[in-house]
Length: 248
Image (cartoon, rainbow, N blue to C red):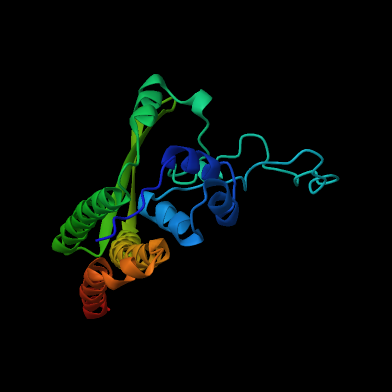
């Protein structure tokens, strides 16, 4: 039986790939097939660093653009909740810097699952607060009580001011938050489903590329007679495809 030809210099191929060499250039340089290059990239999940945020020397796109008037001094509109606050590493506290440095995304699936669990907890808290308001069975809800003390020539007097709001107002805010959380949960589940689908597609692509690379490695008639390896790959492909179609 023919043994598969080993691809040497995989580390060098990876470096050249990340440095921007095309599949065709890599195949020519290392004397391997285009499909073998594609197989290595997909199997090892190599990724090139994005240069979309890099401003090239001589770039004139922003010339004459003042960037707009900007926000007035002291503008705090975006800091109401901190949700849209721009974060600069230099202004983080030491505790925040420590947390930032420890954050690593090794597994996207785990991150999404953790996010989904946190959303479920937030959803529970909001539902609990909604129930607490509804159980009061009041049309008005006291927001705050303010006492003001003032004096005159004759006596000292204290005025108490009670501010109340309609119960419907906080309920609407909570229900709006609940809707956003439910939407975020759906997006998490959609992301997990897409990841599972992509994993199946990648498995099929790898098997197909392995088959094509094996066929290209067959260099003589004697090798072509022994097609047990190709047959095994075909059987594997069929099983993976059956699993993929059942899920979709």
